[in-house]
Structures are given as structure tokens and as C-alpha cells.
Length: 119
Image 1 (spheres, rainbow, N blue to C red):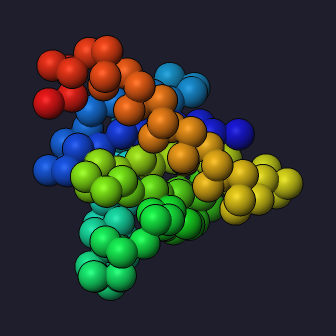
Image 2: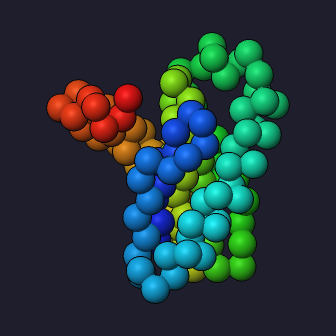
């Protein structure tokens, strides 16, 4: 189960962060913020290949004792970070990939109806 989902702008400031349970909200903000270094490393390691790829799923960014952090980046360099409870062993990588793509599609639809929010 996803315990935190974040949408991060190209300039690395949060556009949206939502966590459940809310009592650990600061911890998840820190986890998302620290994952941006790993996202930047993966993007720079891919270099030019990332621009040519249609698949922008970064996969597992890093595991912690309690959580696993996954990343996805769009063509416009907007980042999606998802923190998942590591006790859920049935969750597969392709399921995380489809949720990430669904998040991007939903964000695109929202930005069409409220463009001033995301510009």
C-alpha cells in the first residue's frame, strides 16, 4: 500500500504531497526530499537515453527499513515519488509502474482544467 505520494516540480519544489497516516507527515516529507538526490543521479546516469525513451519509470530509488521509495519522471522533468510500505511483499514492480503512469495521466488531465495551478 502506498503511504505517501508526491509530485515534484522540475525545480525540485513540491507541487503535491499526501501521506497516510498523517501523524508521520514530516517523516514522509523528509523521505521524499532525500529521494530527489537519487532521482537526479538516475536521470544524469541515463543521460541522453532518457530523452529518447518512452518509459520514464525509474524503479526502486532506495529501500528503508519500513518503506520502499519508487520514482517516475515525465518528459517535462516533473517527478512522481511514491513511498510504499515494505511489509507488502505481494506488490510487484509492474504494478508500481502502472500506478505511476496513472498518476501522470491524472495530473495531465487536472492541469488542462486548471492550468494556472501548474504553470
